[in-house]
Image 1 (tube, rainbow, N blue to C red):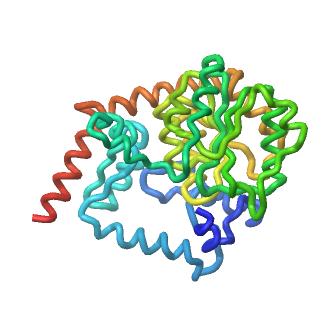
Image 2 (image 1 turned 120 degrees about the vertical axis):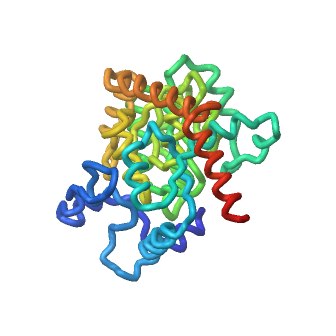
Length: 323
């Protein structure tokens, strides 16, 4: 993952809406199946350079995709019906086959579970720590495998967690802070010795499904978002780049399971949102919505579920194209 950022050093967590005098707040009404989205919600458009590498890569992928015989999406029908309908007007055959981890879990007895899909070495001690906590009492904090932040932003998150008085499990990768090691304030360790657990990586699906976890402070990557939905866990969202802004938008505005934190992170906002997520009325309402999405996700991968049926259709489509 460090190599990724070396190739694209311009990636950072800035408030692009301010840089463009508010232009990126413009509503977009021409995207099939999408409503009330803004320019800044779309991935990789925040550039004025026609030769920008990532922008042109995405354009190339989009142009190539229309030639595909079939396309599978890691989602499920009930979660994004309008988006999937919109995609069906562009691509010949669209199949929603998610959540993939729920499908994979059905094949544990066949040894597929041992394959794994984590990008970092997992620390399982955090699961033992979670066993000592009350149900729904811990906020899980993880900004994914690529997101980076400044040293000042790290401190703001840290002190926000301190001031919230909420138990937390925080994943701090060795490369989380841009260009330097992650150094936490001395008062952070003093205040959170008994109610905080920090490690460099963890088995996220197990953590999110642990009874002690009641909320997720996330970068809104799609993998994390859909795993949180499958676990029935609401989110505080701090999107970084790529699809994360759009995922955040849907989590907060369409699915009712998220609250967005500002790009220019401040400890007061972290404290307020984490407390609301874990103890507030809005957090409880979001938890109820998340549990409903969990139920619908499980239905989708059931024997007669839409994703199970779509996966069979997708496989048959691929097989028939090779004959």
